[in-house]
Length: 329
Image 1 (spheres, rainbow, N blue to C red):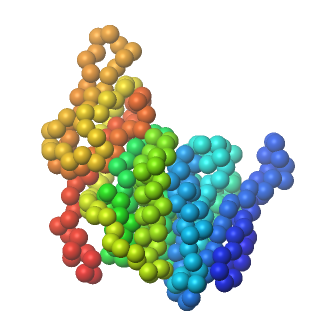
Image 2: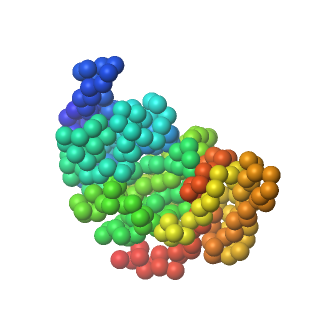
Image 3: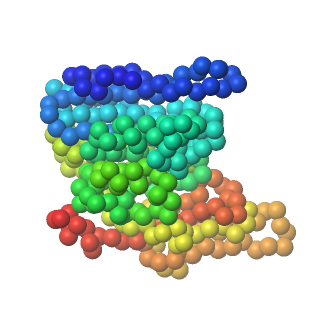
């Protein structure tokens, strides 16, 4: 583990013992950068919580090399590949134990590798921080209109929202996930920390657009949190709310889903979002999926083939009515 109070940039690794069939005394080394400037807040920035999401590692590494610590206010702690084994395998889950890092919080110091990483983050790194930025995309199985996510239950909602808008993604999304008690969100809320996350694309791909948005948006968010001077205005962002998962469109059986609109499109209640084709059956007509309400198409399934129970689409609703009041709090 590196020293976190050295002036300027310090880079190295956080080490985790991992005994496997292939390596009895293996050390999993998670890359870490720490940038210290003048006195001020600490922001912890995380990438690759899931290993098939690539925008975060790119943006965080770019930030580590771009920041002039002479101009930096406070401290940035950067973990570009939090789940390094999963990232190197290109998988959502940790290969060593088959666990989802963002479903085991607050972790277990005596548990498997994934549980110990979560415990270290919850018990050591997050208490040191004032703000946490957790960069995600949709991985292989989901594809999002690039968005910054703000937990609707945050005790510091106005600050989290302002940071999200500073990123300048096409959408800034209020979200209250059903599974949040198992995630980093719950730890941040219990510690009283500001948490902002993202969904910056998906389908297991990195594009020029999403990489550029992640890199430029993260720099703007860091400035918005008070660490650096803001250079220009952020691009406009549509402020929306994603309803709970019972409003998502789910496939009833294995099928190929064909979208009828594009991610980010505005839709009206009853508009056709796409069709599911049951190509293994000669006697079944395709199923048409309709928008459940007015809003914007925020998410599609990230693969052509969707299995029974998979999300095929999610529509976000307008939330601008409460935005002005919220930012005045």
